[in-house]
Image (cartoon, rainbow, N blue to C red; front, side):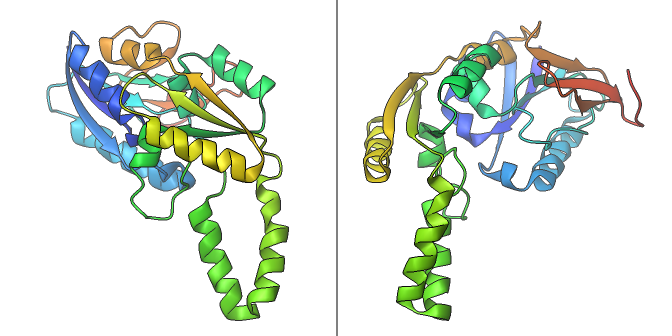
Length: 250
């Protein structure tokens, strides 16, 4: 088969590795990390890539994304099948299964996630510097604005109050996919954890879902949409389902 892969650059190294070993021809397009913070923008960019692949001789378009909030809901398959992992977000793809995702979030709900590609591909655009909520870069910008408006003492007080954003985080977790040198990112994650009073864990990632996606093994853990169908949210363990692009159940 000839496959068109559209995915997030936080999975870049894993994607290229699996594409290189796939039995199929895989053309890879990666989109900027952090787009999930603007779901409509993410949806528009992914749909534009799907549309651009129409008529190009592909057997299927495959997505290296989870649902990412509601960002992928409404994506429409064009002239070939569209394959989407049944995943809430990229953490499932890093961990290799929805079950591991569930176990991690049940056992360690206050986890701030780190991964090699996410950190090293920071382009200074202001998107989160790790796979948790909030970022040091965003807080620094807010602090500078408060100093300008209210003075340093008031800014310090306001930032202390705002520090509650991280109060529910208790753990920094670095996902090791076994691809690339993560030493610098591990040092960064350990330092962040020590500074914020969190525990640190190094979690083994699993390439299985990414490998299966690029190898064409789409049973069970993937949704395969036929031309004219679109991604729908299911609000259950299956995460996503399908419906006609005009609406209604399928």
